[in-house]
Length: 119
Image 1 (cartoon, rainbow, N blue to C red):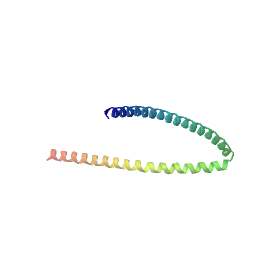
Image 2 (cartoon, rainbow, N blue to C red):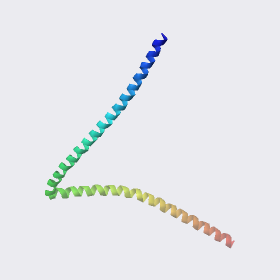
Image 3 (cartoon, rainbow, N blue to C red):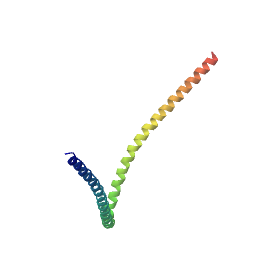
Image 4 (cartoon, rainbow, N blue to C red):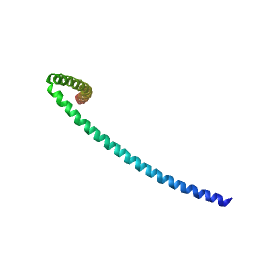
């Protein structure tokens, strides 16, 4: 009975080693496949970009439509800038308030010192 158990343990160890090797191979294969797929996608994107450039050339011929699109883009940009300005203004206001408070405190302290000297 003891001999049989020993044999079983040895077999299990061998199986584990095989599994590890297989996992490593699978990982390598998966990485290779992913890399190849990514490269293919990048090549496809490059080809698509080239096609888009041709379409842009067609749009250049229609001057009227292009002007309208430019105006729309400018409006969007202005809106974004306004939002940013509002945030900056709030910060500036806070700073101004702080400065005013500091100035007031300094003035009050100076006045108190002068009164003490006079008194």
